Amino acid sequence: MAVQVEPQVDPERRERLLAIVDELGPAFRERSPRYDREASFPFENFADLRDAGFYGLCIPTRYGGLGASFADYMQIGAAIGSYCPVTALTFNMHIQTVLWTGTAADDLDMPDDVRAVHEERRSALYRRIIEDGALQSQPLSEGIAQGATRGFATTATRVEGGYRINGRKIFASLAGAASDYNITCVETSEDEILFLAVSADDPGVEIVGDWDPLGMRGTVSRTLLFTDAFAPDDAVLLPPGLYNQLAERWPYVYMTLTPAYMGLSKAIIDFVREYMSSQAPPGITSRRDVPQKQQGWAELQIMYERSRALFDRVVEEAGVDPTPDALARALAASYTVMETAPQLAALAIRVCGGLSLLKEHRLEQLYRDARCGSTMLPWSAEVCLDRLGRHGIFPDAEG
Ligand SMILES: Cc1cc2nc3c(=O)[nH]c(=O)nc-3n(C[C@H](O)[C@H](O)[C@H](O)COP(=O)(O)OP(=O)(O)OC[C@H]3O[C@@H](n4cnc5c(N)ncnc54)[C@H](O)[C@@H]3O)c2cc1C
Image (cartoon, rainbow, N blue to C red):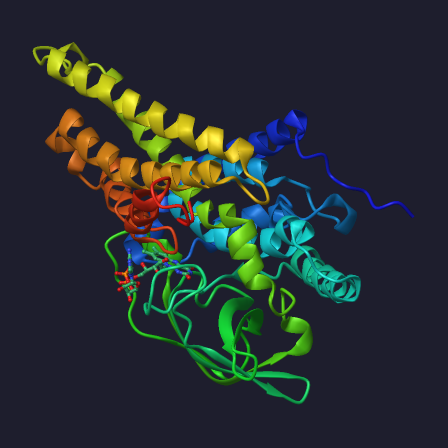
């Protein structure tokens, strides 16, 4: 039987999926302040996403998913982010596992027998996601080093039928909400990076520490401790050795934290437009009649459009084996989106004025959430600057 392969570009599919986001979005936006206040996970939003079939958003239709492409996902993530940045950021962690094991893995080199095993494992994973609503997370960070393929001290030791996992992951978004923690760890005998799933129910997994951050509070990114947790062989989500190939050949997967902040940027623009448009009571000058505020509003639009244009361009050209210039553009896009969001938020507060700082307005939360993006590894703003600072002027610089 011929395998049904999704068309990469399908404008009708994207429009249809974006329309679903616009249906769900107003409720996401309404709930967002509560998750922020309580620093609680957006369970209701995820129930809505699940009911809409969005857990399977990037799962190909032949497995029962919605078949969205990488570029579709980036735009859909940004649309979700314009309603609730926290939901977009956490949903991204779920989608990542699907993209890595699906779209990206399809483009990587592996022997036929290895691919057959991978196919079996990902089919089982996709079934669990679609049929059981198994929510995925990607706690990779350990706070040891920057870079996609460095800084992992968590170990996987070979035992009968699988691996024993020991270590610690910081900023584990979806802690306590995900069904699986899909981690990077070092296989002790081979000294290579494995990407594997540890079940949230495993007795060797513990969620520790407080969670009371400045922004993106609903991500509930607490610390995970693994003490002799067990991952069976079929929980290895990428064939051994493939993680480094993924990082090198499909680096766009590290840009997928940007849609949440692209959407957040749009939310700021939407807020300012509405706030500035409102009529002042009699006897008070309307904000929109003040030339300085008009100029600030103009600057906000220019900043947003620059960020959006670069994001759109890179999203549409993303794929396997980017040229050095394309990779540099992706780093520039990441930097731009992550740095523009907090700049927009800061200027928006100046333009809208002091009353916009009150918690009854959305801007105050967006300002705090916006601040988080540029710290996120492996493509933090500083890492993007490091890499772009070498690009093109050293022969062996990697983008
Ligand atoms: C809201 C939120 C949610 C998150 N969710 C997740 C998640 O689900 N999964 C996940 O894996 N991570 C997640 N993260 C973590 C994030 O990606 C970073 O790993 C984290 O912010 C790093 O914090 P740090 O204080 O260790 O930072 P850093 O200061 O960046 O330090 C990390 C390590 O990298 C080194 N380093 C950093 N930059 C450079 C550089 N330019 N050159 C050389 N060395 C460098 C530092 O010296 C240090 O050893 C989340 C973060 C936030 C804010």
